[in-house]
Length: 142
Image (cartoon, rainbow, N blue to C red; front, side):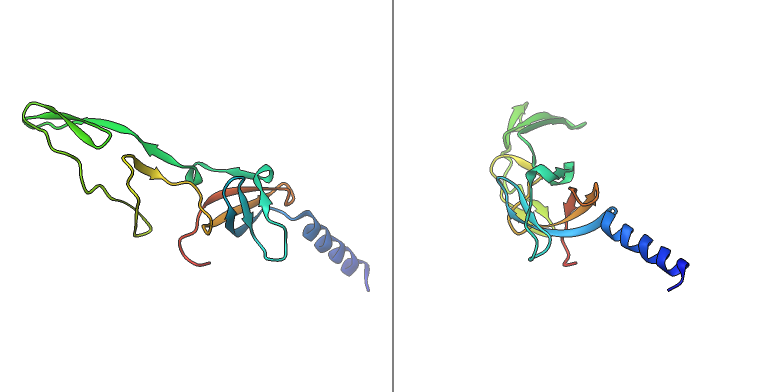
């Protein structure tokens, strides 16, 4: 083996050992505490090595207000419209969708649901494979 070939092999082995940043798909196997499995043969990733981004953290709106530039105004609070004039309509049939499926309605508008068991997620492996950033859910089989 020539010196150049030996050096190339050393460089390749070193890069594999460093585990540079990589995109990985995982499955949520437990929510509290959070565990994500990336490989059936490896131990699951647990909360201390997972960094969550905003897109995988639950966000709900409890009330919101708005005005129309017409002949009436009203304030929306917990799914009931408070009349300001003759308007007294109830908010019913509120449906929020995620990936074409209706989310349950419990009096709050879900802007973003938290992670659930079975969710597929994109993970960014960082710090030589010691930490993972949970980027988002995956809605198509990868």
